[in-house]
View 1 (cartoon, one colour):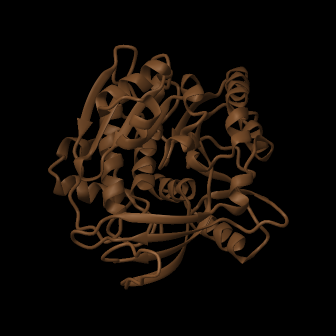
View 2: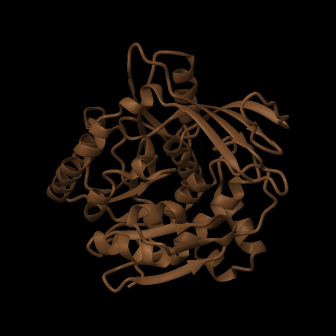
View 3: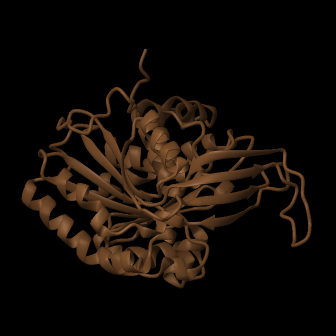
Length: 372
């Protein structure tokens, strides 16, 4: 069946009673946008703007997720044990520098609880982002110095286990920016996730887990296949799904991922302006959803915003996967109307506006009403 929230028994949980934990990369982006082309060596190319912004795939997803769920700095509390509202916590590694403090402040301002481990002697990660974002020139290129972000290890994730012992609730752990995980973390994750699932079950916590790969090459997906049986959702783009599965077509790739996950792990693959495809369940139910057309200013972070919309709808609102993916596609499109990965966090109001423009009246009726 095309069920929501990973197919678990969610009937006992009200919408919004979820503690989200996002684990992964956080970087300071140096973003050059509006470039007609990527320069070759010894060449220069004009950009319409150059900005310094917080980023990283997991970081972007956390900020957008908090915005879509209506989290705010006033509602964020490290000591809160209430299960009556959503919360978002971010887990990652930073250096001891100004970039680290900028990233922390950005998380707090977005209503995300930062759980950041400092790595002495290492710089906070950074990334140079070269982006087209003008008609006919929508490509991107990246130069990344992972720095402290690449040091993330299970020893930095103790708060995940602590959160499972606080009160009975529903929890979702999202592995963001898997491409940047160290080899040691990839090797440790299968046993660690098994431990987390066992502790969640013992505590009466309904735990779901997702991953967003963000990989540009096969080596950045190493170890992910071994995790699929422990996941509830794989999210990537079509190219990543093909790399992970070894299949040539998107549908075959998604089916192979679901089979390798034993039917437990649903799979989603995005394809930019072509929308997204999904597959789930032992029967391999497949489908597709359209993209929401927008005038693109910058596509940086569109996949991260899509992931946030997908998780907000699938986990917190318990939408069917097909409906949740439509929310995700709308969130991704909304982020393309501003510069940067999460400079302007996507709101549920922006999602509703795009869905209304697309004539998706039925889905609009299922979304929670906006506050007065």
